[in-house]
Each structure stands twice: as C-alpha cells, then as structure tokens.
Image (cartoon, rainbow, N blue to C red; front, side, top):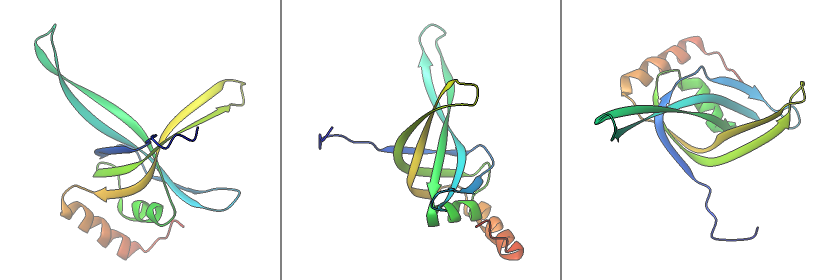
Amino acid sequence: MGDVNSINKVILMGYICSEIKTGETKDNHKKYTKFQMATNEAFYERGTKGSKKRVEYHNIISWGSLAKIISDYGKKGMQVAVEGKLRSTRWVDRDGRNRHLMEVNVDQFIFVGKRQDYSENIKEKENNNDDPF
C-alpha cells in the first residue's frame, strides 16, 4: 500500500453534457458541484474499413471555491478541460443492491471554448446575482 510509485491522475477535455448540480455535504457543509462530461474518440475499424466515433461519459465532482466558479460560469454544452483523481465509491442501495460509482475528483478546471460563450454567461450572472451557495 505504501508504494511511492503509484499515480492516480486523470486529464480530460470535452463538453459538459448535463446540468451542473450544486450541493453541500451533510457532515461538514462542504460545497460541491457534480456534472457529466462527454469525450469523443475517433478510431479506425478494420472490418468495416472506416472510421468510427465513440463517446465516453464521465462523472465529475468539484469542491469548494472551484465548485463555485464552475456553478457560476459553467453550463451544459461548454467545452472544458479537467485534471484530477479517479475516485471509486461503493454502497448498498435501499433495495439491497450493490452499487458502484466512478468519479473524477477535480483538482484543476479550465474553460476551453470560445470566449464569447463565457462572456455572455458572466453578464447573465452579474445581472442575476443569484448565489447558489
């Protein structure tokens, strides 16, 4: 377990593909945001002699001040880059079924898309001035 040669690092660039949900933990009232992110992969398939596309969906969670920035300025459809760690959670649901969730716990977040997309969102937030936290 104490192997110093272990690495848990995830870097993704794709699009926010769900509404951004904000929340707070019950025990220590830490703020967080959750959303799904889609990444696209193009590959060549030998049998059909053509290129194919595959979409992967990733569960993303961010905490604290980073969560606030994402909730304030992020929205579905925006292109973003995230860097973080892969976290796995297991639990038993109300029906007694074993459940499993993989999430990317964000350390760094960058808005990648066109600046005009974010400028409009910043103006909306300034005019609305709703604070989800």
